[in-house]
Length: 621
Image (cartoon, rainbow, N blue to C red):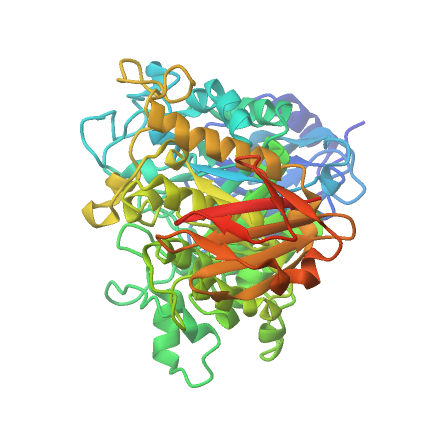
């Protein structure tokens, strides 16, 4: 017989009445989040939010052996937060009954589902991967029927640079073989959750429903299908998660559960963006408050993670997506804009549940010590008794260098190749430099090919660095076919549509036959480089020795106990000749080598000749 937990003793008639009503409609409940949960989670309880008009007027009962740990009501009568214990509870359906005046007003079924086998120990992305970043609205349109979905405001206007262009999940699925041929092993898509802003909603960072895929991209079920199709091709699915803010159109922002659900001032206050305030021992209190509590932009209310209900909501939502969509990792937007102590708790909750799960935070700092502060177990953070628990950070310092150095023909003391040398000389500051996300560009920067005026030689040099130094390389969609974009013209210029993603496009760059010759030149180099890297453990986890650049030529070695690769980058416009005796400590007993791209052989007992503005990646034999 079904058992009920209850504060008061109900008679048998009441009990039978509850059973009878268990299939009634639930028109009073407009939202229930999470919509379901899982048994056998390390997190031993789940807090379920019920939303509906004046729902707080009801008491609650729950069926079966489920135990209510806590019922939280706020100043807004439209919310109830109910925490149930899931410890030692099997997968099952059970019934919440909403009681008023000792009578059941309505009921709601809730489900605990069975987890995937070994779900907690899922693998994640690491330094063996190549991450491919796309903006789904600009990648490919695979389903014209969802372009003008009636449930959201902004419709398809491809003729508007900053409008919705119609790219969707089906378009991604349609072109996954293209990613495989490129050597991609992980896909990072900018947010796919619903963003119902009236304009510029395509970027997805002003989310209006964090449990729902934007209908212009598809459905939740389509996202599951994408994840499954990626895994068939051994490509990992990395979700772009936002902890700092939501959009003004988020349904909870329109009816706040508590006044302090978001950070609010008497008048609109924008963050000062001075993230150094996190560790600044001389910072003023008002500057610090504005830093963390100010809004990113007027359309993105700043979430207050110090409110335990908010922090728990964000934690459960993140775990829900991992479990539901079988995710392989997170990239977290504006990670260090959130309250540091609270975002560290959020991160630890996730990695406690999934010990191998990688999370990279967007930490847009340009100083190695400041970047290191935010990586898990940082010796810098330890000075202030702070541990972010964040496994990975984005190496913006290397990105800035990759977007500048190949235009610097002057290789003097602090210019040109010396920038790379100085950056890697500071790797001792990071607790795990191999788990840094490295990139030349992303959806917020100039396009690499714009900076280098589509000089393919400089593109190749940048890609060669990404493919051979420590860290997890990430490339940005379309650059591998020569796409360029000037951020000074606006974000739309660096987020153009991938050619061939729409019916009627002039050429289809997803296929060799559809690409132009120059597009194939870019693609073929990138594909050969990263497919070579895919199986090279000495790049993924080997050691590095580098040599002080001379005459704007930088040489470094990646090696392990059995293999060695010599990388030579000539940033001069003229040919250079290198004497190899300087590098004998790494060359050792190797006598020859072959460049992985040109397949040209080199005698390591002789001088190495390298053309201007070029790179050699020499496997030693």
